[in-house]
Amino acid sequence: GLLSTLEDARMQTMLAIAFGANNLTFTGTISGDVCVWKDHILCRIVARAHNGPVFAMYTTLRDGLIVTGGKERPSKEGGAVKLWDQELRRCRAFRLETGQATDCVRSVCRGKGKILVGTRNAEIIEVGEKNAACNILVNGHVDGPIWGLATHPSRDFFLSAAEDGTVRLWDIADKMLNKVNLGHAARTVCYSPEGDMVAIGMKNGEFIILLVSSLKIWGKKRDRRCAIHDIRISYCKDIPSFVIQMDFSADSSYLQ
Image (tube, rainbow, N blue to C red):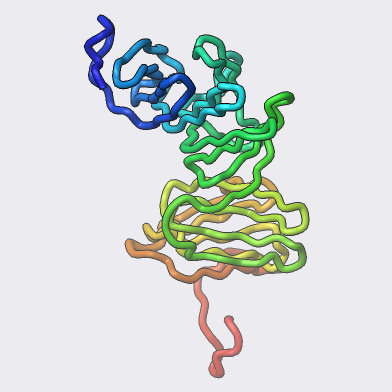
């Protein structure tokens, strides 16, 4: 297309495209602008449609409304998903309030009064246009293999740890999820016998203890330079002082 038809136009990287009625085309840019094209001529620029890159666009020819998705932190005036009128002059912003931090949208789709949103965190979120209610339909790890998997000793929970640096707590009965980002790739995970703590072995040789109730870090220590591929957690009770030495019994059945 020709960008030189507008004085404030400049060459930009286009990340998303959508086609509208009357030979109009809309493109989202890396700077957060939305360009409106007539055939191959640039007609107008909607500056700062999003605070960050516009990764996704979707048009509904039935009513002409346009959905954009990009990188934008939630605020009173803005959100990562926006629904625009046919002229791209007025919009309604949707904040993805799912209990988890979501500020980057990678794909959008619209139909029957709902907007489907795909996020950078491998989530698919359903957003109601009338009440802005958000519901997570699908959730998973973002990138790389899942190395660690552990089931709760008494409840319908299980934990997964993966290359993306997150540990995720899955509630099978309520189909809910909680997660924590540890900043490094995880290799193994294990529940304590009571199920109130969990130990994670990391790729960088560190192991981390989390409280299951909040997924907050209880403690961590660097054990080695290479990855920890297996880990177990247990308690030593009724010991009056510090443990300074351990050894196996002769038949290797006990630790003394």
